[in-house]
Amino acid sequence: MTSSVGVDGSRPELSVVIPVYNEAEILESSVAQLVADLEGVAQDFEVILAENGSSDDTVALGAAISRGEPRVQMFSHPAPNYGGALREGIMRARGRFVVCEEIDLCDSDFHRRAVALLRDDVAELVVGSKAMKGANDSRPVFRRLATRVYNGVLRLTLGFKGTDTHGLKAFQRDRLLAVVDSCLVEHDVFASELVIRAQRVNHRVLEIPVQIEEKRAPSVGLVRRVPKVLRNLGQLMVAIHATPERRSDERRPVAAKPPEDDA
Image (cartoon, rainbow, N blue to C red):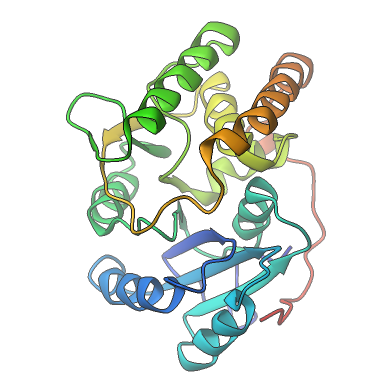
């Protein structure tokens, strides 16, 4: 983990954290477009590629991108673990605001709307919902149905108040870091735990509709993911009911380490 403020005292306004797993096919083009779009969103920003267990050329390509574009960094989480990689990326982020992105989405419209809401302090956490009124989800019907069933289970079992937890999110880093620190379950349900815990300690959470059009099929198929998600969902229910959340003034201290060059 790194300090949120750089060695020279500088701090970008925005950090965009993207877990990547076997994304060699679209990594270069997606990051190039993202960087170009972010120049219209924030005066200074960083992109953090949270690689986790890739077996293709993702690591080599990410390293080459970082060498050519200093605003892009990459580190490697030791195993395929979406939530673990996302959590580590958030802890490494230095920005005042953090956007959690997906490499196959990189939704510049969400970036602009969410950052504007955070700047105006309208919300502390903005969730891009694929399921609320006004959203347009062009994924296959079974994936859209799975999203609704999953979030329905969260509402019934954990008191989730909303329509979506997984996908695009943006938040005020200093205010939500204690919630990130409270999260216990990783993999696919980390994002859900983050949103639910933020709600439970009365952080201002706002959903906004998003337009979802993926650039490629999921790297792991829905059928293969279901058993793992169900196991992690059971762990999430235990974790939420057994472990209290913390707000920013309750966060346990974490010793800062100097940045590591993992790319």
